[in-house]
Image (cartoon, rainbow over all chains, first blue to last red; front, side):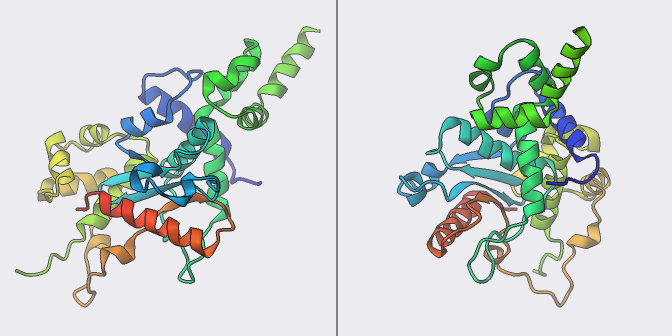
Length: 182
Length: 115
């Protein structure tokens, strides 16, 4: 996926700014629910909206989360039947939309199908991951030998951890420094 | 009473979106725009800002007041028709799932207090 120039660096700056605002260091883990509270975003569980929702059952994959603004308020509804790591990822994806200033649009087409903009979805995926594990945290994980504990420390899936270690350049940076020492 | 031509809800939505895109809290907005925190709390409770407060918030956000003035001939549409959202869901939704998600969005919108 080709991003606009400077997007990845901008995403990391946003991830660090959010931490700074919350009194956290670049390598600290974040609690997505606490980020919502800090930025006055109402976080709502799907089960609070509809405890009988079909998306809370066995077939829970079609719905992950949605951001709904109204006037001065913003709410994120997320699927609380997903694995906690996936819930974190879903919430951070929605926060990323907000922090990137993505324009909200009618979520469905007049024909009742899902309206989707692949460009902004890819950006939200990237920043969502960077919010969970900024570049500095990815490097810290590898340098400190925390790989076995990193999923639990940062509340992420194995797939997200691998993605962030790769996208942050942490693996390359560590390999280069090993080569220099050799 | 004449119809209110200033679309407060659209203005607050744009201000809120600008705030989040700068990773700011409402407290930060009050400090940086130079308005009382109480002005923003009143807005949150549905009050309209005074002219000075409005000018300060427009300046802070780089928004333009005229964007939020309804043309005399433009009728206000039903809020329910203006609901927007950002959705994370399966790219290939069935009609039934799409309808259920629409219901979630509408319920959430109605749960939030509008301006």
